[in-house]
Length: 343
Image (cartoon, rainbow, N blue to C red; front, top):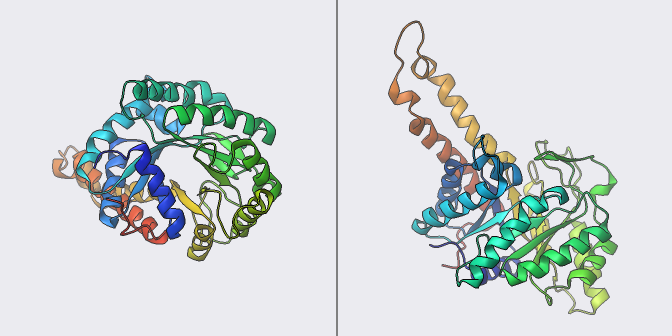
C-alpha cells in the first residue's frame, strides 16, 4: 500500500488506543533494515511505523555528506516506493530531535512537507518528534506549541517528550535517577499548553523509568502507573468524561521490558512503542553468525579465493533482514498489533 495518508495515520493511532494495542515504531538506518521492517510488519499482518533518528538520517546521506535532511528525504522517498508492494499501512516518523538539531532536521523537513502539501501532495513524513527532555518544561512546551502549529499546517502529527528517558541514544545521554518519572503536574501543564487533541493532534512520550539502550529485565524500575495517573489528572483538571484517555502515549526505551509491563502501559493509552536496540542486535547477530560459521568462505585465506556465494552481500544481507523481520513480528505480538490492519 502507499504510505499512510495523514487521515489514515490518525485513524491507525485512534484504533490502537480504543483497541488497547500499540504499534512498534522501528528505527532503520539503511535500505536493508527498512526492507526488513516492511517484511516483519507484512509477516505479522500489522500496520506499523518506521522511523529514522538524526544519526540514522545522517548515516543514510552517506559518510561524505552527513546531512540529516538529505538522508531523511532519501529514506522517505525510498520507503514510499517500496512500501507500495506490502499489504499493510506504514507511517513514516522522525525520532528524537533535540533543540540543537531542530534547525537542521525537523524544521527543514517540516518546510519541505508544507511545500508539498501546498502543491497537493502528501507530507514527506507522517510525524516528527521534538525531544525537549534536556530543557526546562516551560521552554519545552513553548517550542512544542510552535512546532504543533507548523505540523497542523503540514498535516503532520507532532510527538513530544515530557520527562527524561535515561541512557543514551544518538549522543543524547541522561542519568538514571528520579527524573525518569513524569509527574501529574507535568501532564496538566502539557494539556494547558497544547490542548488534549482539541487544538491539534499530538502524541506524548511521558517517562515512567524508561531507559534507552541495553539493559536486563529488572535493571530499571518501570512504573506504568505513571501513565494512568497522568490520564486521570488531566481528566479531573479539564472535567472530561471519567475513564477517558486524552493522551496518545509513546513508550520509549522499552528494551528488556517484561510483557506484563508492556501490556499495562498499553492499557493506559500507549499507541506507539519505539524499537531499536533489539532489532539492531537481531540484524547484526545474524551477520556475525554467517561470518563466523563460514569463515573460510567469506575470507580469502592462505592464497585461496573464498566462496563468492558466501561473501556476496545479498546472501548474508537476506539472512540479516529475515532475522530482523522476525524480531519485528515478535514486537507486534507483544504489543497486540499482529493481525490488525485497517486495510
